[in-house]
Amino acid sequence: MVEAKKSTQTSEGSREVKLPCGCIYQETSWMLTRVNECSYHHRKRTTKRPYRPKAECVRP
Image (cartoon, helix red, strand yellow):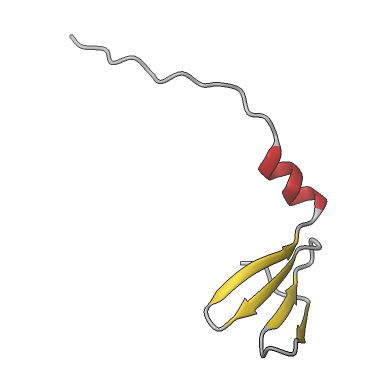
């Protein structure tokens, strides 16, 4: 897991956690919600992947 570099307290009692890559998450009790996404993770999430067909079953 990536260590958080910076965390700040917001008014509702939730914390904002900033990761080294630039992503910003908001932590409320047990759940992390992404507030801002860095360009690296945006690119990884939205890249077009080539179609890979399922392997055919080979029966003897």
